Length: 304
Image (cartoon, rainbow, N blue to C red; front, side, top):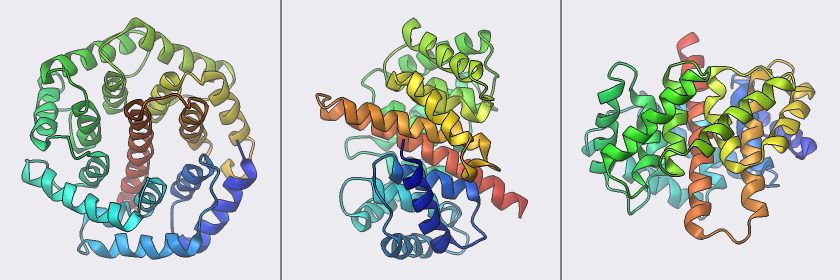
């Protein structure tokens, strides 16, 4: 991990965002670039951020998450402006399929691929309600997109997710939307496997053993760490981050940021990965970063 690069990116973003932007969002966005060994181009970021913010109406949910969404668009392969246009088209497609307007609908739209049928995403979301009618909400749209990439039937996917949900809950994970998101994410890597579930338990235990406080908000990040196989590296990175001055008042972000670095390290060290597998890992990383950013942005907005 390059701590100096994170600091440089944070400095650039603070000039772009101003003092009003939540520090946790700045840290998360700075880490997206630092994990790729990239220094942010402040002028490009500002220009795209303003474009994203002004794309929707005054009350558009996209304005709530324009800052982290800019980071996601810039770290995605291809032209960020073209990615933004595709995002808007995908958003309207999801809306026409029955998904409601929310910040998470935009996050889901970011993850949609050309081959993904919007009707399948809606079906998976509705199937989630079979187990968790009151728990399932807008926040589950990105997870539904991730699961829709799998070839199995809608019922098989959601049933497998429920197996992960119950297993991890029995092992000490708290019930709630964060656990549901984690369970859904694990399904993207395949149907229920003891090995994957045990890796999640091991990641959580190792983080706690080394003095890191695991909260429910960290469950998706723990899933990424487990799937990347970079548990030791993630623990070390999280410890380093917590001791950085930047994280003095945002220590809860250390595990989430460590997960971003862990998944990127897996991609970088696995040159032989097929395009499909690499895309899967990147999609998972994007989902975690976007969901965490969306949650922070929403809480900040409601508290202002």
